[in-house]
Amino acid sequence: MAQDAPKAVKIQGCTSKYELINGTYERVPSDHNGKAAFVSRMDHGGTNCYIFHTGKARWVISKRIDDGQRCYAFRKDEPAVANPSLCQGPWVTAAEDGSWSPDSNISCALVPGTNDMFVKMRLSLEKEMTDLGLVETTSLKQLWRRLDVNGNNVVSLAEVDKMVVELTDGGTWPSWLNNKEALMRAFTNAKGGTDGGNDDYIEKCEFHDLLLNIFWFNKLWKVFDDIDEDDDRRIDLREFQQGMHKLGLQLPHEEARKTFNEIDSDRGGKVLFIEFCAYIRKRVNPDDNVAFDTHVVSHQKAGATLRKKHGDAHSRAHFVQKKTMSQFDDVEAVVKKIITENDQVKLRTMWQHLDFNGNGEVSLAEIDKFVIEQFPLLNHKPALMRAYKKTLADSGKKDWVEKHEFKSLLGNLFYFNKLFWLFDEADQDGASDRRMNFQEFKWCLSNSGVKMAEPRAQQEFNKIDANRGGLILFDEFCLWFTKKECPQAMKTLAGPSEMM
Image (tube, rainbow, N blue to C red):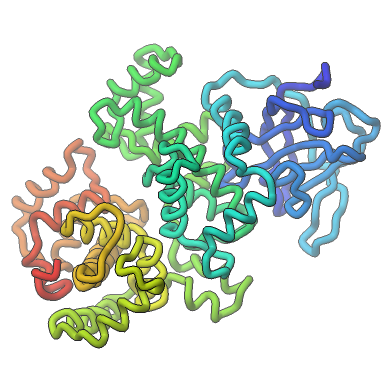
């Protein structure tokens, strides 16, 4: 190891499309090609960066160590030095037309390393992923082929979830990597990266970022879950203060309260996992773009990149467009007719399309594929997950939906997607945060055919809003709705109640 290798370097001044290279890079534990190597603090909006020496004549900033296809910038190693900050020449970056040119505005300076526990946690990911064979290009290609079974170079959340379940159940990956909340954050973060598009899918070029994010957010979830003593998936001030103490972060009472209030962005008195993740991002990367923490991507923009890259035929299969009530009315008529008339010909045809391998049971990934191809209007991931869980809960199953449960699944798919659409439409304050206040709750009830006086509506809202934060989440709304307003509301929304 080079004796004068710094613990960290800082890149600044890049204003091109590769501005993601700006930031602080911590020293990784081992050398690469005989010289120091560095990794960006997590996580530049989903895309990771490394600085390393090629072993010949350049220092490179790239997506992965030794990844020549995703090189964002390079600097000639002149004179031959132990770290890139000592080089005399400029950094060279790619222009919009693909040509390479020097950028004298980019600076590279030595900075002190950090002892922050979350930065150390970030650095530990490299070894864990290497031990599992998730760094080498050959292993990544093999895993991608396993994930992208239809070879269209994009994968959905359900397909990723299926892969994680199989790898953890089989003992290939540790069981702590199978957490749905962390997986959702990992998927959202990775698909917002620089190389791919802000769409509903992970592209092949985003796969390494996805794997890194899966490890990162599952690590954060373990910390979050340890702090959350009563397991309500929310952290209150007392839990936060005690949790920081357990983590070795000694915060005086007033400082802890101030920090907690900064994390608790909606002032609800509870910190959600997504808010905790945003806090860690700011702590690890204080200069990073906080806009990357927005977890709701506009459906209107979702297909832009796919259409540009793959053409209209591809985008028609994957783009989630703006929904309208009339569209749901049309699909509702189709779903009701099939269910109420027990149309065996159509049900059998649809099931055969869904259960393409003919084993009599289907996974979440297969259901996701079926919805995309047969009912693109119903392609809302939170609603898909809720429909899948409801069908399994009603049958007492754990992981698979069987043939005799198909009608129930079909009804649930429509029902929860319409609920999600109403919930999203009720977000009248423009925040698009998938949280609903009382006024939006009343609007949603009215438009879903539920007649309820305001005092009772307030009483029911308070039951859902257990922490009195004034906001409820989609999952909480669904749980309440299915218990309190079904099956009566289902007669309006999705046909006969017995199907649910």
